[in-house]
Image 1 (cartoon, helix red, strand yellow):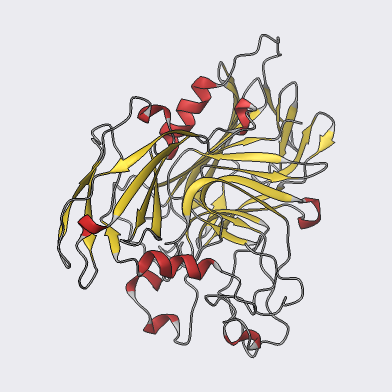
Image 2 (tube, rainbow, N blue to C red):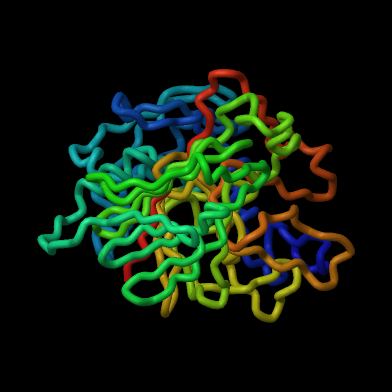
Length: 435
């Protein structure tokens, strides 16, 4: 319980028994019905493995339901999201305590039209035990599917153009202009409809080192939009920026694909212990009024506290809750921190909103940095990336009464070893700054 200042700043419940993220994590981890890892593919037939962790109860005394939900994107301008398009019962076989068996439900005709499968288990008294969610499509498949469904507009637009001078690199469309600093390769200014969107000062490497190479970088115009290819040495190979004629900004980054670091580095171009890994940008916190996103939610996560969050479309107003201290103004879920498996996220603002879409899986979305309790004896959270908004492939665990070194394997920092011929890691995003 968060009632002893900073001694349990990320506990199970708040000072008035408010349910925190850890409550749902424990609910999932200690559920007497456990599901084996499940990845929905084109071959999924409605069956999956279930383990009975009861001491006495056979699973045929319990029941389970399923729901198929849709999760639309802001591109479609659809207000309703999370709509249930099919639901029914899952057949739980007679599985004795300690054994694993196969549960099954008949796939409804509309299954492939949905975006998320939700399963919920109930005990023999009819009380809900736990619920689990699974994306029906991986991030790139989801993105391509939703883009194909986006209504076409008949408005005529001028082709986007890419230009480079001694002082700027500019990708320009009718509605959006993105300006980069030619000396650093970082975004220096974005305007949309005459309004400056203060998303800039990046990409900056997190957990690794990369050096921009201006002589290797280039701009070009293509049938697919205006392109700026920023080349690097070190942990990054390249980041390709492409602004479409309609004003959508694509970012394709290739990281950690060269054992030599591309020359100029001594193979120490990533942290030996990786706590955060990705790219970060700046965006003023004062501009943000809330966030709506698709991914795991609604609670923030840590590397060792992802269970208990579920896939869906979530929304929360901005708050500055300081867990373990904001007892008189405690708002859950906390706004700031890491959010898991981002598919898309809209940072809401009265003046400068924007949406970012993930085109590869496993992206953590860091939104601002939570404040530490003022009365703490020591820092209660691991160090967050510099900057305000980050897109990460790895995040740190949060410690409890024991230091991270004494916790389990899921809490340990990442370790990266690159071999010649490795494909590398991809960080592929699309930004919509259009007003």
